[in-house]
Image (cartoon, rainbow, N blue to C red; front, side, top):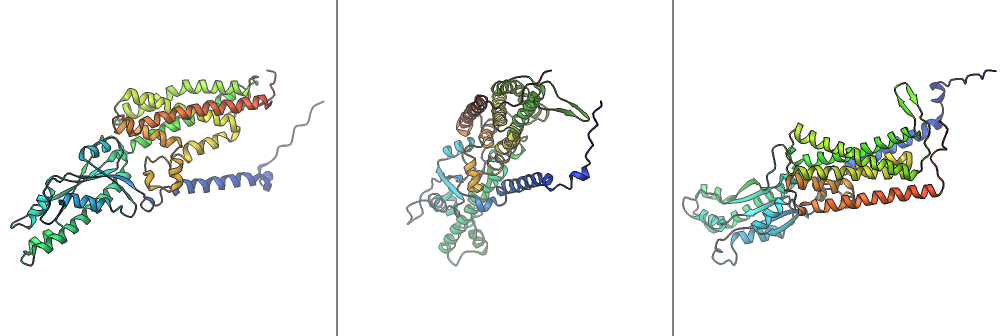
Amino acid sequence: MSVPAATEVRASTLLRRPRLWLLPTLLTALLACLLSLLYMGGVVNPNAELRRLPIALVNDDTGKPPSGQQANLGARITAAIGSDDAGGKAGWRVLTRAQAQDQLDSGQVYGALVVPAGFTDSVTALTTPGATQQPEITVLTNPGKGSLGSSLASQITTRAAHRASQSIGQQLTASAGAQTSPTTKLLLADPVEVVTEIGHPIGAHSGLGLTAFYYTLLLVLAGFMGGNVISNGVDTALGYADNEIGPWHTRRPTVPISRTQTLLLKMVMTAGITLVSSSLVLLACVAVLGMDASHLPLLWIYSYCAALAVGLGVQAINAAFGGLGQLVSMFVFIVLGLPSSGATIPLQAVPGFYRFLSHFEPMRQLSDGVRAILYFGARGDAGLSRSWLMIAIGTVLALLFGFAMTTYYDRKGHKRLTPQPA
């Protein structure tokens, strides 16, 4: 006796079922709202959020103090600027010229304001007959800290230098007296020229300091996408997921295997396949596109370890959360990571919530290391040492969390599917 074929259901019938709409609508709306708030919340108004941006303040002035003064003009200017935090936006660091250069070279400051040697003498000379040479104050930028961060530091230092110039001009105009010529009065009104220079240059093929961010993003995406592709591929091969390509659909016989052994398989495959993907990221960026990069062997090893840490984290999250794992790992590694990375907008210029996330979010830890290798001579104090430490911690946590969860599930008898005969 033949079994009657099931009647096909039409889409128009299903569309009239409110319950079918409910969950997708709620999840989609929630995700859209969260993504909007999280992404845009960190970039809407960096100037308003800016707090204590690290900037070096240097006094190289060796001139003698003017009569009746205990300190030369350089010391007085730097003292006045250092006591004014520009409404909380500047975190001035009073340093020697050598110390300032060292912190520029290690990415610890976003810029510097330098009062040069002989500044007092050049200012005093303005009151002499025939004076035409303007004294200078130098603003040093640090493009390796990102174009926005360097620009914010440059704005703060330039404004501080102009305020100092106007203050000096008022004093000089008062001391020069009424006999001063109109030309000299104009010169004395704003006597100091502000000169902007690059304090720590980076290569022309460095994306104005943005290649570190995009290279980090590539490593995170390589680990994230690679981890999910491997996870889905293994589940399909073992018969725990359907394989559907276009109109073709297959389901392989289920292989009897525990959750713990499945996770071990996925993690070992992640370690092997990530070696290929991370190497291709480096090859494409440096060899094909010509990105400026030194310390290539170190960058290659770092790229592999960074992408691997992300890939292992993805496997652990997928093993713990199942079908929701991809969504959870997307929030952990990308959604929350991008605005808290400090790679495009300084952490001093984002809301406190993102600064809190930056202490442990993977993208911030990885971007510091990439920036140190690409722009700051692979110095440990430029963020590389901390980045290596956080990669190690992240890898250990991924292994512990993943295998702890699968071992728990196995002991509780939570099998994924009942094995079926081939």
